[in-house]
Image (cartoon, rainbow, N blue to C red; front, side, top):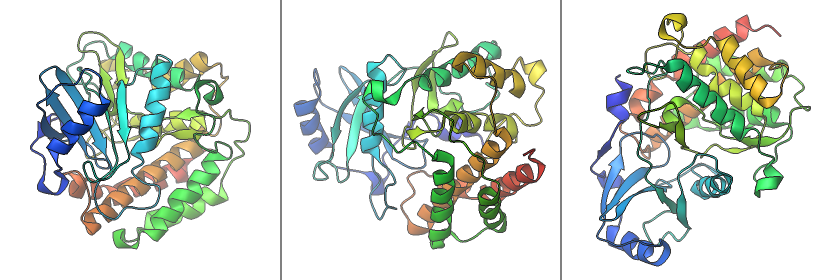
Amino acid sequence: MDRTSANSGTKSVSERLAFDEASLAVWMQEHVEGFAGPIEVDQFKGGQSNPTYRVRTPGGDYVLRRKPPGRLLPGAHAVEREYRVMKALGAQGFPVPKVHGLCEDERVIGTPFFLMDMVEGRIVWEAHFPDTEDRAAQFDAMNATIAQLHGFDPADIGLGDYGKGEDFVARQVARWSGQYVDDVEAGRVEAMDRLVDWLKDHAPDRSREPVRVIHGDFRCDNMIFAPDRPEVLAVLDWELSTLGDPGADFAYHLLMYRMPSAGSFTGLLGRDLADLGIPSEADYVAAYCERTGRDGLADLDYLIVYNMFRLAAIVHGIKGRVARGNASSAHAVETAKALEPLAELAWANAQAARL
């Protein structure tokens, strides 16, 4: 699958995800400073979870992100939390789009939503940054951005109650294991069953990790880069954000080094990093540790396996949404096919882990 062409740009709003645009315009008139209609709404191609739309107006464009219609798993698709964390981080100068308002009144467009600025720039869908000359600088920009995020004390920026934080990895293993087991419509996978047991049996003590705001899905295609320089203009898709273990969050970002360079989940495995001008995994880890004042990343192999399992569990959830008929992306069926290969890759990393 060509991820760039499959996910870039917009399309006409699908019939299932259409809403009353006139009602939205009325809400914007009341809640968005400087707004003037008329509006024109398209749907972004990318995204598997929360439907996202481009709202065009004569004075500028906005982005609307909403909960999908239909039956949802408890706690999923929390656009309210996305809005809150983006508002708090934006106030600190962290690169997120400016948010304009949250609407929890389902009478407006059918489900809760929030509205933010449209940030113009470049989204990179392939981990090796094709058509980019200075890859080292682009990777350094990503590294600096996640280090900046992990430098905030949640209490200092009004997010002290944004999540439990403590015992994060153990709780996440239990959560994703439970969601995997409970989503019977998506079926079972042998490697996932093995991973559930392995993660429980090899759990490390992570109690000394500081509690920080974590993104939960920090990767190149969830960022908007400046078109003419190595700078992250905005970090997107905060649905999985919470308070938790920054080492685990960074280990998820590192999956780009462990994932294959073809298929639904593009990565760098098998590519000649030196030839591409991309830093090695060890050098990338060292840069993050220097920026965050660490001596190193403890339990890295376990955290890699945990994150692969969590990603596989998310794909398992997509497969379940396909079965229930409320997947928001046209590519959800294709993505769901990656479940078993991803679970097998996670199991292979578990077997090779140095614990």
